[in-house]
Length: 272
Image (cartoon, rainbow, N blue to C red; front, side, top):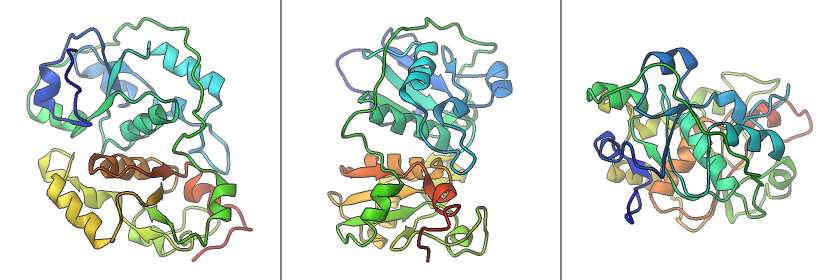
């Protein structure tokens, strides 16, 4: 890997020069069929559902530490690895993995900007089949200062003007016009930042340039040191917003993995 730290947003050309490095772990969260057909050389496959705990009322919630450790050991993650994650969609599932790494204190990671779409569009080499892994025996724990909040924390801080909630869903979901839980609407005090507004479909699904991202954020009057909590429906889209804000230097970020699927299905929570 060398002494130089790879950037949080890693371009395909930059990853190409790193292929084969011992301390690099490339993780593909694409669907299995796509991974079998083509993936970044050396990438290991990780099914997204292993990063969540499938509860009926909140499918985006975190798994317990034991199954999470089992998942990360299956792909051979160690403390020495620099992780590069991607998927074959909008990279929101890859961002969910990177946020999960933050929770266990693994800080060395990058997002392949544009994911598999950009890699293929630029005609970089691919492998097929299933890459072999070296399973580990590590025990991973959620850190006491992990950037994750639960329902109780959300309720206790609803009127805290030092915290800003960002809802990464579509405007239709935010306004309650599209209802995907028992109730529609949004958490009181939240502002809407549709995660799609941060992406450039015309540029192979990359995140927009830093100046474009900053312009969108400036419109929301967010402050880099302010506590910001992102959520969506099951904390995939909001994970992308989390990583985008992190790339801009926001340092007090958290996420609510229960998201609207938990909040909207709880008849005792207030809504707007």
